[in-house]
Length: 235
Image (cartoon, rainbow, N blue to C red):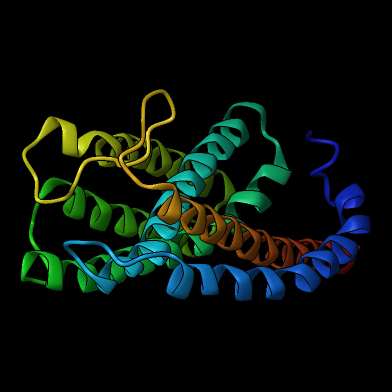
């Protein structure tokens, strides 16, 4: 896996992969949006406002997944000094920040017609806001701390603390009494969401994942080029 992610090997395939994703993502977006906005039914209680779910849920899921991956990469970098993992988490962090912001904004827009307010300081909403600040602090740490070793140590500490917050977000609705509904989709048990809504949700999750992969690869390519330029200047 690490050989594949090395700059010298991965850079050969970047343009091809980016080209493939760029080609297929537009048709997938069109089909997924049609299913989310037209084919899927309105909720019998929430009405059409439930369609915000098709943006809110994928962005929230991916924001959590990306921060978990960032934490894993930071730990690998700190323990084994893998330089390529640094490029990976630097490329992932801005994407995760954008997704966490989208999740909070869409959650507020969904909360207004559902709860009668844009914001409540319950456990899940508050911990999701904390996650966004973890992303911001993490990005500031590797951008403005000049010493690379110190920057990596700070990023690792932040990522571990943020990973604890990820678990708090996940289990907040079970540990505390909140306005936020419990998980409707369960891997081990039966899901509380109908297949007519589950299919568009999965499609939108796939589209969001494709988009994140595209942005990540483009960002990764930029970081690789920047590293190579620095190497040439040193020579």
